Amino acid sequence: MRPFAYSSPGDVAEAIASGGETGAKFLGGGTNLLDLMKMGVENPAHLIAIGRLPLAGIEEKADGIRIGAMAKNSEVAAHPLVAQRYPLLSQALLSGASPQIRNMATVGGNLLQRTRCFYFYDPSYKECNKRSPGSGCAAIHGYNRIHAILGASDRCIATNPSDMAVALTALDARIIVRGAQRERSIPIHAFYRLPGDTPEIENELRPGELITAVELPPQPAGRRSYYLKVRDRNSFAFALVSVAAMVEMGDNNRMREARIALGGVAHKPWRVAEAEEILRGREPGEAVFQQAAAILLKGSKPHRYNGFKVELARRATVRALLSASENG
Image (cartoon, rainbow, N blue to C red; front, side, top):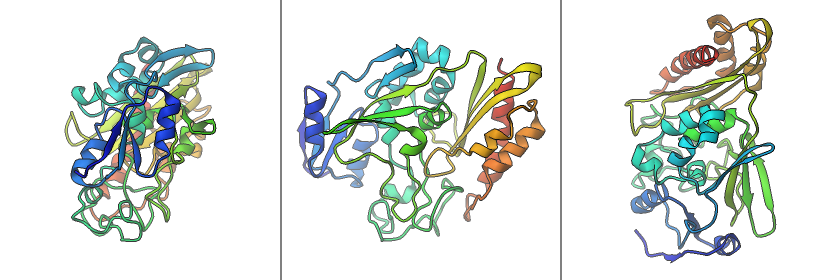
């Protein structure tokens, strides 16, 4: 690990001013950034510890709830407002990492955790467009079992590792960020970027901007939800495929609305409006859920070792939707 400066600002404005420096990085729980520093993937010149900032509150608002960026994942999952009104988010958080990491990991850090691509994490592999733009992508012709089947490019086939972000995408969350000039509210579906020609740019944060909160809109009382995570082991493992499913039932056992977001399959949580639209006004059942899954996975481009993900994602989508529709 290379030498670095360290500071612990007393307020948000001071933190943002320091965050605008070249080579500066914000440090929350440290469960991802410190690992990357030890491996030589990240080499910040200045770590700005934000643990003292008043950004950990969880509060009810007239238009939903606001979750502070420094709130711990375990605290959010157990909070009555979240567990009762947004059980999908609680389920997703509890399926992530391990209890020890959830006790340290923060909401803001979870949103910004880097991909778990084998080649990105190992600097001995020189081909990685995320670490070194223009160097190539070792995963495309390498062992790509965990990699993307949707939305990838010939520059990068990495996936977003966050369970929380998948649930937040289905919930239509907004990410609140603050910079030197102003505060911005970014819909989560617009926060993450697909790799395209610039996979090193993963989100819409500008230099020096700090995530301060996540806001969730109110949820209809009749909405049912289910989070399904398929992984290699039951704890401390990232999703091969995950599904955040929500169904709101109307009259005559017909769906008034449905939401579906996939994780583990793309550079960002994957949601397709057409797949949700086809469910509106229909009775829940395997046949119609199969149709939605087919639309959701349209255009899949698997690689040598991850072709199984297409069928796995299809089955997981159907199962999650069935579980959500029966959850009332």
